[in-house]
Each structure stands twice: as structure tokens, then as C-alpha cells.
Image 1: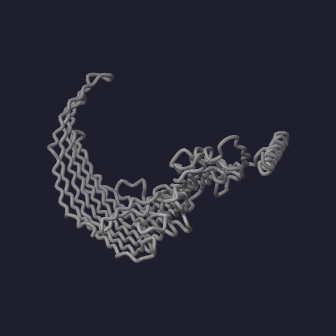
Image 2: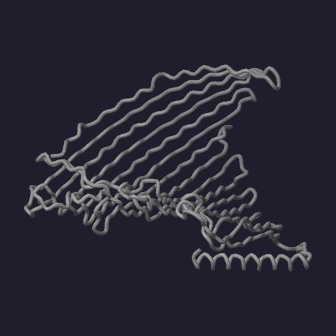
Length: 453
């Protein structure tokens, strides 16, 4: 056992002993809480729990972290703070709750604030730590003993949701606003094959498998706004949302890397860098309506429309050689440059209309009609330039690659579902239904890609 582990265990034991001693003292003389004055503006109820975790792993520490990811150190257990206003203040209830912060792999914070009839605010913030390094998952195949995974990650994800409702108890008018965020960042490892290409002269290179370092950076933000209430006797609502995301991931080999093949004729990479960027957004609307007529006939409808688009961009630069042998068959890659761009759009519409007619207290007939359609179109462009020499240092003809693709898809589907419900008694009932859904219509068109030359 290492000295650090011994120190952690001694420190943990000391803290536990101190905690038990304070608890014993508190049990001997527990004072009676002083009641709050009757004219106090607020009533406060709160609690907080602190702790310390000692940790000693007898076995594979990477397996333990990949499954549980607990760490030694201070912890904040379930804690809360509640403030109730007794008089006509700016709020009625204020609540804070938290748990899991510190050495736990996940934690959350919740904050709520409300005023009866005027507003209601809710918020939740979460943090998750994910670690993965199993030596039997994606190991280097040439190693006699697996020591780590080529797909190693140490992720920290932060998420938050904030929602505000104005006039939450009103049937005539309610206003809703919201915001959410998602942040994911982590270093890690991955595996890739390079170089891999076929030149115009007939040379075909399969490349070598390399373990590369990675930096992941994924972000998204959601904004929401809506209005709900009553209009001409109908319960109606219209909600709008906008989501944007940005992914920026990097894969790189900073120094000389001989790959996973230990053979003397295998290829090697002096430098490699791949930047992968994607950016996009989605606009969406949600409209609904509902009304019951004479407690006999219920009508419900919903319409959802969304329009999403995204752009991708990839830039690669590699320097290396296809073989460590200095022969004319070897290719020395002075610059292998790849550029990829792409764009895609997808608008979609979904509509549902349904009604229920109550013939008697025991017999009901209902019908639901649904419509779903989307159109997706997009394309990409691939460019590659290779500047190289043979193993003897003689310049080779430049290789250029070009390829473009374009595709459009259109999809439509209709569905109608009718059913009848009959309650024979409080415990026995029957349901009969028929669903009609003709074959969905889907059309696809694409442009023939131009091959590399």
C-alpha cells in the first residue's frame, strides 16, 4: 500500500472520529429550538450534510474508475434550504437543493422560486464525470499484455435547465420561457488508420493503425418561449423553440508514432492533425388545441413543425511514410491534405387530429388521424492533395482527389385509427379498433459522385 493511500486512510479515520465525537457531544445537550416570532416575515428550514470519503482499491484501479469513478476527498450530501414567506412578499416559496458535489461522479443543484398566481421559476443544474479506460476494450493488438484502451475518455458534462411560467394558475393566459444548455469537454484517445488512398497510377495504400490523442468539445443551447390559455372556448397553446449546437473535436499525433504494427516494414507518422467541426440549428413550433362540447364530444389537435440544418467541416494534415524501408516502393508523405465540407437540411411536419364521442357512460367511440412528412436534402465535397517522394528521395507526381455527393429524400405517411370502448362493469371492458395506414410514399434522388482522379 502506498504512503498516499495510508495518509488518506488515516485522514479519513480522523475525520470520522471527530464527527462521532461532535455527534456524541450534541446528543448530551440538545437545545430546544427557539420558535420564530409570530411577526417574522419568513420561516426558514434548512439542512446540510458534509462528509469525507476514504478510498483504497485492491485490484484494477482503471476498472474501478470506469465502473464507479468515485474519488477520495470531501463530499456534500443531500442539502436543502427552504424559505416560506408569511406575508405579502415578492415570493411565497424559495427552495434550494443539492447533492453529490465534491468527490462524487455526479451532482445536481435545484432552485425553485414561486409566487402564487404570478410566476413560477424552476432550475436544475447537473454535472457528470465519466471515465473509461478498460484494457480489454480496443487494446493495442500487438501488445503481449494490455495496459490501456485506445478509446480512453475522461469526460465532464455540465447540463442546465431553467424555466419561467407567468400566471401559472390562470386558465385564460400563461406565458412560458425556458433555456437549457449542454457542455461536454474531455481529453481522450482514439484509433485511426492512415494513410489510406488509391492514386491515379494504381498505387493502393491501406495504411497503418495509430493510437491518437483527442480533445472533445461539444456544446448546445436551447431557447424556448410559448403562450397558452383559452380562446373561443378552446384550450390552445403555441410554443416556439430554437436550438443551436457546435461540435469541435480534434484528433492528433504530436510526435513520431510507429503505429500498432511492430514490424520493421510498417509505416510511421511524424505528425497528424484532424480538426472536425460541425455547427447547426433547429427551429420548431408546437401548436395544440382541445375542447369538450356538452361533456359528450371531445376534440383534440396538434401540429408540430421543425426545420433543422447543419454544416460540417473537416481538415486533415498528415506527414509520414508508408514503410520504414528506404526503397523506391516506399512513399514519403511530405503533406497529405484532406478537406471535407457538407451541408444538410431537414424540415418536418407532424399533425394529429382526434375526437372522442361518449355515446353513453359505458360506450365511447374515438378516431385519430395522423400525418407525418419530412424532406431531407444535403451534400458533401471531398478534396485531397498528396505531395510525396519515394524512399530514395525522388519526387513523385502529385495526387489529387475529388468527390462530391448530393442526395434528396421525401417522405409522406397517413394513418387513421378508429376504436370503440365498452365498459361492461367496473372490472371488465372491451376495446375494438381498426387502423388504416397506406404505404408510406418515399422518393429518393441523388447525384452520381465523381470518382477520385
